[in-house]
Image 1 (cartoon, rainbow, N blue to C red):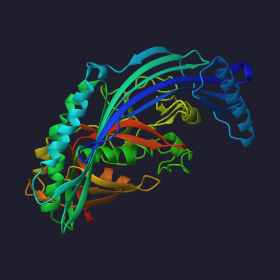
Image 2 (cartoon, helix red, strand yellow; image 1 turned 120 degrees about the vertical axis):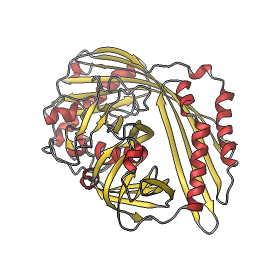
Image 3 (cartoon, rainbow, N blue to C red; image 1 turned 90 degrees about the vertical axis):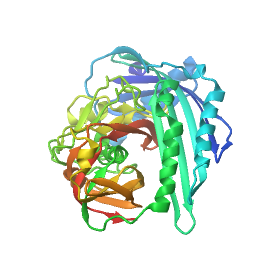
Image 4 (cartoon, helix red, strand yellow; image 1 turned 180 degrees about the vertical axis):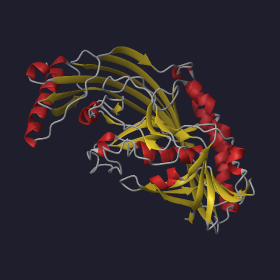
Amino acid sequence: MAVSLGAEYAEARLQEVEAYGFALRNGVQEPPTFRGDRGVYVRVSVDGCLGFASTNSLGRGSIVKLAEEAVKAGSAARKLGYRTRFSQESAVKARWSTPVQRAFENVPLEEKMELLKVIDGGLADINGEAKLPARFLGYQELRELSKFINSEGSEVEATVERVGFSAILTAYKPGVGSAQRLIQKGGSGGWEVVEKWSLEEAVKREGEVLARTLKEGKRPPRRRVDVVLGPEVVGIICHESCGHPQEADRIMGREAAQAGKSYLRPDMLGYRVGSEHVTIVDDPTLPSSYGYYMFDDEGVKAGERVLIEKGVVKSFLHNRETAGEFGVKSNGSARSSGYDKEPIVRMANTYMKPGDHRFEELIEEIHLGLFVKSFMEWNIDDRRFHQRYVGLEAYLIEKGELKGLVRNPVLELTTPGLYGSVDAASRRVEFEAALCGKGDPMQAVPVWHGGPEIRLKNIRLGER
């Protein structure tokens, strides 16, 4: 219908989402939530101008009208004078789904709710001068069914099941103040994903460390030292100062009024931004990952994207629109958070590749330094060049050994300064989950970010 009305290209995506969740606030159960969405969008190109329309009314007449509205929007956009072109991609016919070992519907609701109650009970039992007066625990499971077709002959069907857990813990000690910890877990699959997290032990440990930091934390060193960062801190660094600035729509300026710009230019492939120990990739196909997918929302097959290789900018993240502008193939980075949102350039699972050191080897040569395992807050400018991270769980390193806790150390560096100071990385990789926001209207999509422990040389620390 869209092509018959004058579009040289047309695509449609049908999506149905069901999500269920519940929460405890200070041990008290809040009302469960249920969300159900079902609808379709049509996107077209008319003389190089994009048109987009969506609806949750799925009758035949509504779909015909939707195609008409999309073509009308594309035709009207010609007055703006901006033209785009999609990259040439092979037509695909595929069906994929996330592997599930234990379906959510086979786990009694009481078992899921009891897990949160047990976790909260463990937090409430933490002893010490610092208490946890505010505790929020949340759980959500989601199933998404989608079908994508386009005028080039592609057809992709997908069934995605994801699960997420979040906790916000606030500790307080009279005369000292408060500290807060945000914990986020997420993955694709069934209840087996939750069982692997060992949430009762993991969350209680976080609560204990939070309380101990208020009670025992000392001031950080006020001179240049070597710093070891944990996977959680490395992950947020990779996401914010590598993944986002290497989104091609940012580099083109499309995101400037919405989520910021990029310090990179289109001609900066091959630009050295870090040491040879820094290789960062984005890979949607990681098994059980929160950002898992096999084909993106433009029907392009997904795979590992190497963003920085041994310190050198290797590639950007592309959908078909930006790939066409750059004269390259799409690398499957188009994602849409719902049937009423256009697919835009997004990350999936962004992380730094491991090195060949054991953790003990990273710290054994440090006479005086710091190990920052987790962060409390982060800030970054809209070009993704100047960045700041405040540590939460952090330890002093003296003569190659971890000593007492350090409170509120601040790491403030430029992107090249940070990546350029990396001189070693550990052998293991860990991931954290998040919902990454971008676009206008805002789109939040599930992602992982992570990496190994890394060592930074000769860093000046600040203090919050």
